[in-house]
Length: 491
Ligand code: ADP
Image 1 (spheres, rainbow, N blue to C red):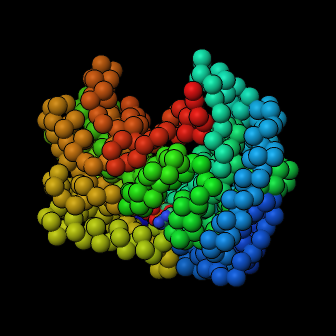
Image 2: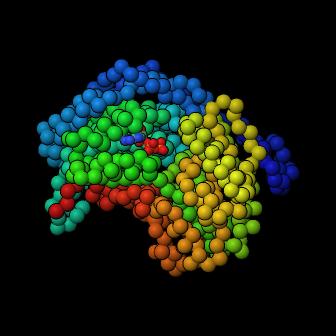
Image 3: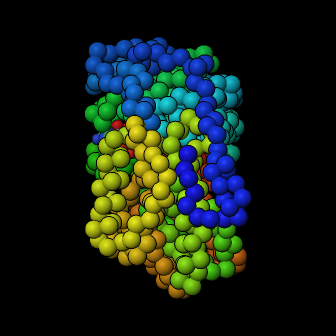
């Protein structure tokens, strides 16, 4: 638990007494298997080669996970094709909907267990897995269940048809939620699925597989294969896949775009970001500071739409920075399983190294680093919440996605300058605007090149709200009626 470094009346009165006692979430009721395989054609199957999935907060091994080679992926695609031709594409939408509703309810029933496993495997604070990831995953299945029998109303006047087999590859920052974002609309639209979870976070997808089995989802409708990039590539490059959906890094997104070019496969990419959180001098500052914190420290900053660049109007910069530094020093960093933890573990050593390297680059380029003096656990992958001031738009920390709890602060004087600076990035995923004036908010929003723009809030998600980017952040939308477009042929 962090000690506070500023002196408030509360500190003077209570001092160290005002610390949170440990509030660990129990994991006793969760039994992990020693080994996880794949879920193909409705059954759990194992392959020989394995890798370990670890708890990034303790570096302890949680389980062994099998690696799918090309032949295993081929078996999964064949199962998906058969299920598509024989069962799923023929089933009335109202029947498909029943499965999706059932899956949503079963996620809710097992929500605490799933939240615990998500946190153990990925390092995010339990309060986030419990209150954000798992409820939103269930909400996605509920939402798309509602569309399954209404596809003809989704695009009035058009004919719609499912595509076939969807090949999907997802990242490690929201493992269950990304699986839900991908699987729910695909199934609602009448497609079948082969999906690969990320190699550092495969476990909640395996619980989802158990749910599919228990829900009686016909064999082959969803197939889950584990492995690394090569397994993902085998899905993407399989001849019998009709649609590819990828969420992950821009680098891999570009490889996939090249691989899919000219094949006739439909493609959606949800890639990186470098979101600007713009604070005008007429904004409610205390709320804005909460929005800045949520924008960059939610999920340790492992969020593609994170508000990783703070653009603050120059005349309020000192006041905002003072409030921000104080708030930063109250963040509780550490054990993700503690219900009071705000910032948990970095997902992997590889990611920790990348964050460390970019933060060193920020210092070397002349930006000024601020970190609270909170203690970090001795084991595990942790990084102090970090704020850089004196950042210029050309610094690497202003341009590159850090994907960690690191905020780069820039200032501006006029709305026009804010827009130019916010758009000065190869990415175009998300932005936040904080202002008391609705007219200013809408005018600035109209000028920003980002797929998602929040007004006086940040990181708010809803299944009915489309999400996706421009430029190097990718294309296509997930969520909402727009999210169905990726899984349908509309004529
Ligand atoms: P991150 O930086 O978030 O780890 P990656 O893009 O490396 O992002 O990983 C996202 C997902 O893409 C993971 O499931 C990973 O295994 C998979 N992946 C990595 N390389 C490839 C590839 N060449 N083709 C398909 N999938 C890949």
